[in-house]
Image (tube, rainbow, N blue to C red; front, side):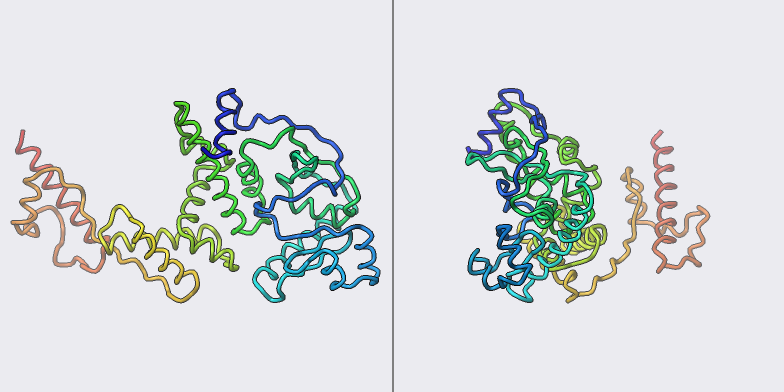
Length: 360
């Protein structure tokens, strides 16, 4: 049993509720707070001492100097009034960090002239420091606005919350400014925690959370929960968003479901195995990367469900176009799926009614 499951099991045995952790609000020095490297908001960063930040702003220290002092290569240096991107120039990580830096600077400038409406959430670590639970961008902005040696108000949990990733997702899912990749990544992390939670429940004779309960604990609707499940079903979707895909969740979900439906129809599959999913993943990847254009799904002819064996026999052995049921067979457009489907529905309904009356 993992340490995480042991903690959950202990909480369940003590009848502790899922989100019942106590907290308070108090002022904490920013230098005693560290970010969570597993959070969707995190990027590899090093905090700069206020004096060094001042010297950099006044051009008494260079970027190279700070990189040497703080071993800043492939990291982002953050200090009062300065954020320095030391990731590999032009790389995807460098570009992504730049976008985050812009939003941090904007928020930091706002903090300088007004109060922070929603304070970051932290919890204590064993070494006397605190770790950010939610509000990473706000925490970075506080350092940028006021410096590492300043203090600020935080929401502080008495202990590390039982399901940290679930709490992080609850916030990430509701924030419009978080990139789609960050939201999907946060969802996967939260679901891993919920899986551990469910495993712990099973070990003490309890049932797993239902889908509705899971969605409720994540703080999202059933529809949104379905969206996240579909979008995290194939690795290529996360990779595409990580690489900068700008399509909406709704459009990408349609692509995924369309490829799945086409594959099921083509291969007559109701249940997809690992090999099937790998193939579907490749097809979705090609579509999202623009290497393949989506094929228009062929419209199928549909028959109403047949209950009577006599109806089926009549359809297979008789010329139903001779039936006097008000259908002008000579003028039916056989390329019009709706017209043909409606005609067949009329035929089946007539034959089913006749079969029922004959049986009685």
